[in-house]
Amino acid sequence: MENLFDFLPAEMEYWGIPGFSYGVMKDGKVLAKGGYGYRDVEKKLPADENTLYGIASCSKSFNSCLIAMLVDEGILDYDKPIREYIPEFAMYDEFATRDCTLRDMLTHRTGLAPHEAMWPDPSSKKKDLLMRLRYLKPNAPFRTVTQYNNTIYSAIGAIAEIVTGEAWEDLIRTRIFEPLGMTSSLLSAHEMYEQPNHAQGYWNWEDGRGAVPVGPWEMDVAGGACGVVSNIEDMFKWLTLHLNEGVYEGKRLVSEKNMKEMHHMQAPMHMFPWKFPEVDTDGSYGMAWFIQHYRGRKFVWHTGEIEGFCTLEGFLPDENIIIMLAMNVHKPLNMPILMTSCYTVFDRLLGDPEVDWAGRLHEWNGKYDAFYYHWNVDLFEGQPAPVPNTKPSHPLSDYTGSFNHPGYGTYRVEEKDGELVLWYKDMPVRMEHWHYDVFKAHRLKEDTTVLTAPISYYVNPFTGKIAGFMLQIEPTVEPADFKRVDA
Image 1 (spheres, rainbow, N blue to C red):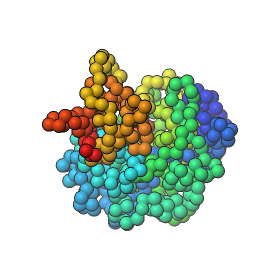
Image 2: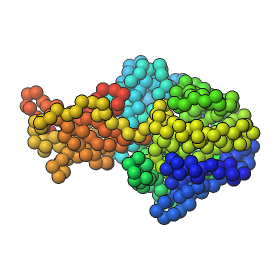
Image 3: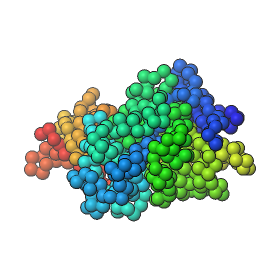
Image 4: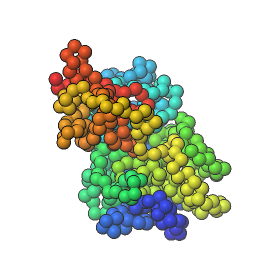
């Protein structure tokens, strides 16, 4: 049934996708697997079912499964406060500090703003990130809304490390990769790029250049949110474990009870801007899985986007269908092609009337909402023009140095060729003077967005020296205060 995906080449051309790997199983049998396009455009290397991709946020399901295993063993409990395991655990909100549980964290209902600038941070360990949560402001009251949060899933990885005394990466390898025979799967972007059949990642900047190659972005502390590398063949094994509710090749790895917890609707979630008779706009979140209904059939799935890659894992439990999709471009416009692929293949497998899903979703090109969003976040859009004829109050050299926020860590500002440069993690960010002591920081790379934001310096009122700056690095809360630490 290789023609299941015969619509893909035209869709890839429309959406600007360099390479695409796919796989579908039904009733334990592989119906289609392979690829279209190139895993490396410059070298003209084709994509196939063995090509490795960063699976990004699909990694959350591995983290959730690890926690389920620890719950099975009585090491953890979904509903006990984290402080019972880690007494020094704290969040910004006193109520959340006291009562926050793994269930709250796994279902994205902590109230914490995304704070994507927290990770990945090569200077931090997983426990460092967990301990910094207390300095990050929420944008909603605890347990009132469901809002997707990579920082929290990164922190979950730290909890697993603390209670077991083992590295999160070792736990994933020994408890999941090895029992399932996922011999190609990895936990390092740099290791992926060393393998012979890996996808080169691309960004599609929408500036006329087309797909632009990018290098590997190591997840480090954020492994629990987005650190897994895999291919279609290995992900077949992973998804079979979920379809079989915790059993793989006759061996139970996770209890049926906790598998159902992962796949059960636990928190409502707004997903897409579109709504069609066959599929709703909204759905629910389980524990690292989205749950929706397609033509009345339960669809359990998750997507992932990270530097250069986009993926989807999913299954229809009642129809015994597994689907895995991966592409080597990172751009939020990918969501329509993923949904087009799922819905078209489901219709063909289940004998439902075929719908022109490609045509339907082309109409949503550029109309953003929920998980279908634009990568570019520019906080200067819609703001007044800069005040003319102003200049900084101090020489540029006074604005350089190291500045610390207890949650985000230490950033350094340097002067280069008459301009300021912010070293954000290990990435240089150009700072353009805006007016007075305000500078425009261009393109701070976060998870799936690029942020352009103001940096507003302030002085010590007694000495007149630059004492720090305010940076709105999380758009949904007020600016963060970075205090000078080198003077």
